Image (cartoon, rainbow, N blue to C red; front, side, top):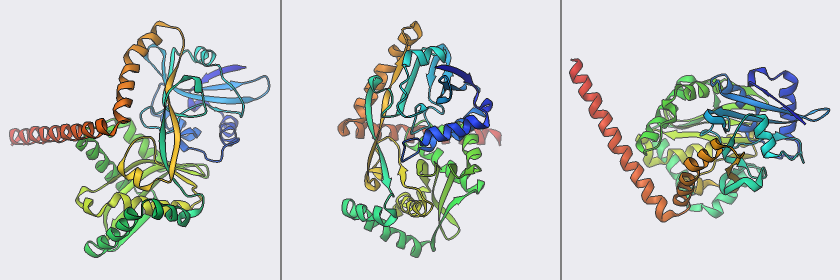
Length: 370
């Protein structure tokens, strides 16, 4: 076999068609983060994105998208944003990790949401990725939820009716391309990150631009999907994600905290699942991570893996020293509710203090400018 390393923009039309064919070979469900359109979109905004095109003597048999960082450290395309990672290859193709890394001029290839059947010898841990199962339609999904989380379902339906009485009629708009609505959602999400002590992804302009670019992508096999719930003309909750023909990736959900007593996030997710099922979506992948709303709405769990591929190089040794103990500590905390819950409270407290300091600083600047 041989490998050619190209920027995504240099992929030819027949190569993109081959990518789609390989992605669907033997797979019932296709995660949109593995589609070429996602790599193309990130590649338009980042200079470090590359794709390894893998060929045997006759055909293209695989693609390996990655971002090349300093010291030859390889990361998934859109690292930190993606809920599915890995190579796209013909069924049964086995790639030797050392050979792959050497041809890609990488010392390390790290991953934290790897498709669980890839490179199993190099997994350091596996993690559940909750999903909403729509394969029997929305009614089939809610039949399960009513059995498993009946109290949550009934409470959400009651709160939706109450919201309609208190604020105005509740309505949903699925698959819209309203940039103003998207920016409202992004502002909610950005504030949520800060409020809970997390890193604000939307503080990075390229991520804001990526989401806005993807809003306008709509093909049969890949699209950006914006879903908003309104009380009258007032937006109260929303979600922006990506879809393939079979999977909707739950990416950026958020809501107006003024409506928090009505559980608008749950209202929005159930409404979104109903409309997604009508559009042929079979699974809503809610992504790795322990969240209360995921536990309430999930039908089950997929699996993703964390780990790394590595060659015997000084850069790989340094990467292990810096990254591996930190990740092991983080995973140990997340796996134990007795540790996870206090840590979450600590982060929220930090977020509140940080926001208070930012507001004080802004107030002082305003007074100084007067």
